[in-house]
Amino acid sequence: MNAATREHWQGVHRSKAEDQVSWYRPRLDESLRLIAAHAFDRDGPVLDVGGGRSTLVDDLAAAGYRDLSVLDVSAEALQQSRSRLAAARGDSAAGAVHWIESDILGADLRQSHYALWHDRAVFHFLVDTSEQAAYVALAARSLRPGGVAIVATFAADGPERCSGMPVQRYDAPSLVARFGGAFEPLECTRELHATPTGATQAFTYVALRRLPSHIEPRAAHATP
Ligand SMILES: C[S@@+](CC[C@H](N)C(=O)[O-])C[C@H]1O[C@@H](n2cnc3c(N)ncnc32)[C@H](O)[C@@H]1O
Image 1 (cartoon, rainbow, N blue to C red):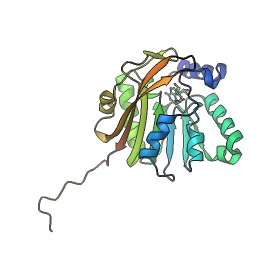
Image 2: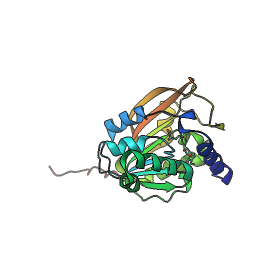
Image 3: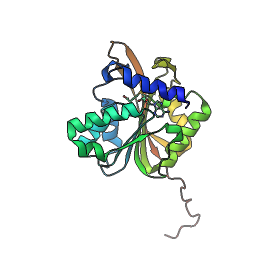
Image 4: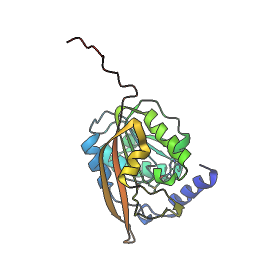
């Protein structure tokens, strides 16, 4: 990501209230439903990629998830989220979250660490196939075997742009295919998101499980 893109996001988060942006939801209901269904280990490390100012971190903290990280290219977004969480749950709750200011493609993440990778409306900004591949490789490397990735993008019939920038749209099969052989699909859903101005945006959600890197071959002559 270049400096202009970073400035774009800093400008969005500085100039628009959180409920004035098209992707705003008071709660990320579909993400929370998929997390409750597929990623229920409250001790497992969670990474919200491009978490922005969403309230997912508040809801996961309230639900008892203890190891939360929010990554965003915008320091402004992270600061606003941190302040909101501190006001709602106290400084220690906000201080316990790992706030990571980084472009996801340049992020220095621990390998085989995360139990849950969540991304709503970030992966779809990667329109270059080499950047998509780099993102998927990073997710595969950073998740522990058996870990879960929940990724939401604009659907194939969703908008062509988000925050004024072009996006790659996906239906469920193409999003699952994009994540490739390191993941198996657990659940795919579609959401019709109502924007604050009353427009409707179709989203594709996929929940994927990180497969073990090496599947032990079955012995040809197993001893009973
Ligand atoms: C469309 S908003 C979605 C925010 C949040 N996930 C939600 O659902 O409300 C995209 C967010 O991703 C951040 N972002 C965009 N590109 C990014 C990148 N390459 N790496 C990290 N964060 C990025 C933006 O600053 C913004 O907060």
